[in-house]
Image (cartoon, rainbow, N blue to C red; front, side):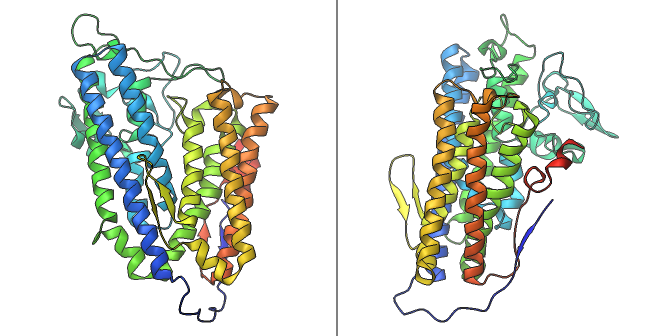
Length: 417
């Protein structure tokens, strides 16, 4: 996997007294992070309320309400992903809430054609139907499905990353079930009767399924409470970037560049197109991938412009990295602003097409030129903006900044080996 290593440059001359300072820039950055994770927590609590209602009284209406709450919760969370890669507090935590893709057979029943993975003996465990099992030589009592069981025993069990048992995507699977439509239109179609305890229960073990969904949702809320606290005044994540503003600026650029290039353009978008595989979609069960990608792009732009629009329409903003760059090289700032707008526009084109009836699944189909053009338009825009982010790193003289790479971009032939 290619790493982009940018050299150190000589420090620039002192700026006039009225110039935006690094300390002001990173304070705004931390304020936006606090707001974004706070909104993620608030929407997760709304999801928790909807999940409780579904479990208490399963119906088409309560299942749909829970799904809509999950979709709403993704909007602020995806915008926080730009705080990854440069912030160790976030990076050490993120896998608990947004890890993907997952071997969903670990959690619940799957289609009979979904065979056990050769690399993952737990890929068809179905813990909902299996209250006692072994992980290696360890016997596990899963009679009670609790947040602790999911967090401490099931998530990444046996050291295998595909054993995703917690977070948004585990909950997504519990609400939608598998999407068995391939590159055709349509999301997962789990019936509400999967939660109907007693007569009418489908899928078996409806009480345990409800317990798993509740435990996973409660755990998501607890994890987001932790991260919202980390960005509050006195929190660990805020302290990392504000105690050393120069490192804070580096964290901003690391998050922008790595999410833009290796993670979003590469692993989340181009790889799925290369493989023509809807299983590589980020929100594959709900067919919400177009929104996930779009709000990632918006989040990258948010941190550069230092402006975040909250779900209630209010804005958190302040001194920005854009202003800091403009003081040193106005043309570069104008270039990066334009390229950020272009990537959001390209991701928006994918979103508009998906919401207009051309599902992201269909865009991935082999030989679909329209879908390929839409997806590669987004990839190309993200790669192009990364080149401008690299130039900003050079302009600011930040040593040792490495952006995440992706084989799909750096070594495409290896993807098929």
